[in-house]
Image (cartoon, rainbow, N blue to C red; front, side, top):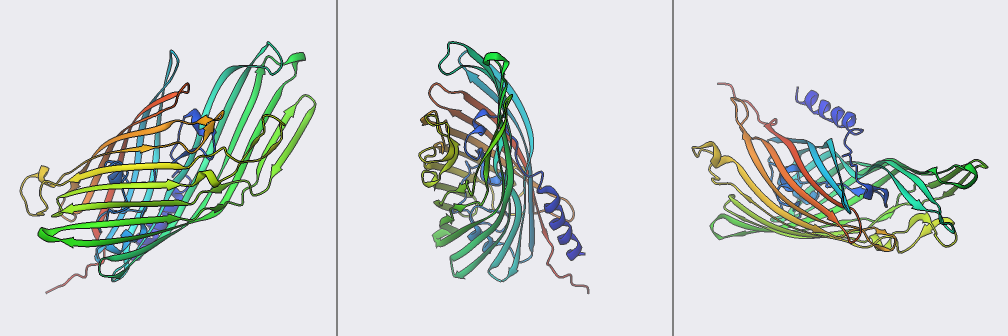
Length: 424
């Protein structure tokens, strides 16, 4: 039965892989690889997204694979989440609201051997989804054209991760991922062209590649039941092997330009620290750097009109996160339901990785809160319903301002699958 259930989870992850991409309606997703997904689990999101130093055998923390070694020897942890979001777009005196509801991720964590844990899962990597119409001036003319911009797609990530405690307090881990997806972007002249000419530009790419991320954690026990954990991660940057194409369709015919091996992902470095006091209070802080400035991007040179790889389109992406988790009572036998609820709060600040017409894109401010509500019944008292609430602001000078309110519901199913029953 255990093997059947485990196989069902693997099959379920495969089925959900095509659904695991979170949607977006942001016009900013037309740049680069789109809006980079928040790959943290729901519990982490309530704490501002911190992850580097978090180490628990009851929660999946796929952002630092070294944490897998902390999994309980009797546990099988399955975590899946959905989200709903309302976004207000503001430009000048105009405002527009949009709603999205998405499947976020599915992950699992289990022990392989003593001090050796493993995790599998499907998460989104980036999201593209936008559609809008604007009026623009025609080059070398006083006339204007009505332009339509449409885009959809993104990248998915399926991973297998391992974490091992090399010696007391020190753990290493790795996530090996399969990265795949596609995008389609079109720019259409709806009206305003001279002599009734029409023009459509289409951009696209198909992805099928890998991703490798390494992690480490060192935990030092402190007096009075406290501990301090330092964590770090490193992600390999490399070419994705995806050809980028641009097709121009007009009354005079069509023409396609292809750039071989055009897209890349950046090297990523992260570090953080977490302090835990008597399993009741956790305070954590993280920093992450993505070296997008070293990545070229397929685009059209405004001076020559040539479609080619361009430098200087991306900027390094910096992200700072802080968060806290408070559990009123660490005693599992304590009376009172509210004493067993986790209360979380956090915030983060992120710089943009792409530029728009030569200026930096929108920076992001995220303020979050969350709850971890225990689900107790006759056969399971270790599963948790995690809820996170996020307010996200994206803004830049003279560009669209986005304000989003997002709710994520994550169910962490934690059951003693590997316990042996004793019959008298």
